Image (cartoon, rainbow, N blue to C red; front, side, top):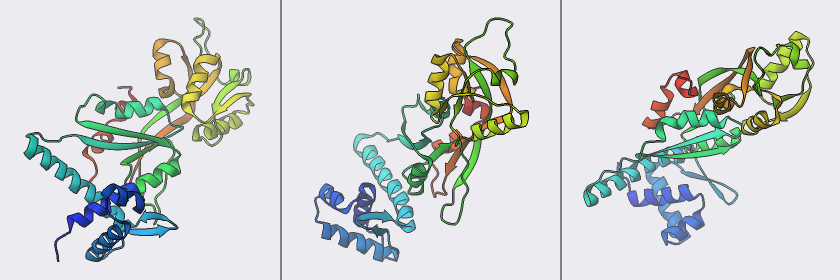
Length: 299
């Protein structure tokens, strides 16, 4: 088998990163036709198509995604070699790309990456978005992991690896009460307006089932999809909110909010979603090996 042409591989890598042949050609200072020819030669050598066309948009094929993973490693290693021999320094900096569902607790996400925040050899790339959007980035290896409070299931086209990394009870919280005035659950649920997660939330669905079982009707003050907004409303409005305590951990510690009660049989699950890779980032392995208490910041 002939040796891999790394010049062609670099051109492929540039187009894959840019996602556009015209922009990549301008960046590389070559014509589009020359760039197309060299990528075609690489495809011929590998015996696989690396790109497919969707209108004017270039999409990586499955073989293209695999090739991009190897190309990233090859050129990163080349940069290390140059730095080591020219400057006498080894580039030990590692990059970890994490996607977080936009409605997921920011506190949970911070707790997840906290072990890496003081390391000088790590660069974190944190991206937020909808679950479908983040999974698309994960599939083409633009992300290493997606954090979600919703489980996803693998199928023939999407071989997701979804593991639960933490689970915690859901609580009712509000302004601190006077001594001796305990929250009466479930009676007080019907006596005051509530701040609740949106109806698409698993927490909300479980809460509705519980209230139906108890024969309770509640009044909604606000339905909030974004946990960061729910946290602000819980802190500033003086109303009772339904949420996992990790969302308001700072307010609970400072005494601005109080946990009234843990809602029975109601939990939020936190998942780490990945895809099979030849080289799983060592940093990610370290984060995923931690205990539930460490992930939640409650150890």
